[in-house]
Amino acid sequence: MGYEILLYHVNDGVAVITLNRPQQANALNDQMIHELFDAAFRCDADASIRAVVLTGAGKVFCAGGDLQSMAEQGGL
Image (cartoon, rainbow, N blue to C red; front, side, top):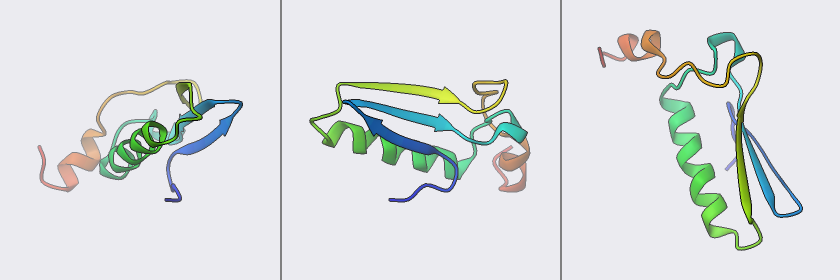
């Protein structure tokens, strides 16, 4: 699966997953959540991956849930 929000790469047995919505402080929206689940399962299925680094682009790792996105979808 190609990702639209996450950056994902593996090097020497280490998977690096980067939350890549810095303009929204890397807040979680539905798409990011689905991509994170996929990336986690992808890491689990790859026996060559020995470690996973989860990081965020920009100044903030993750501000939590994207409340604006949730409200637009009727979740609030």
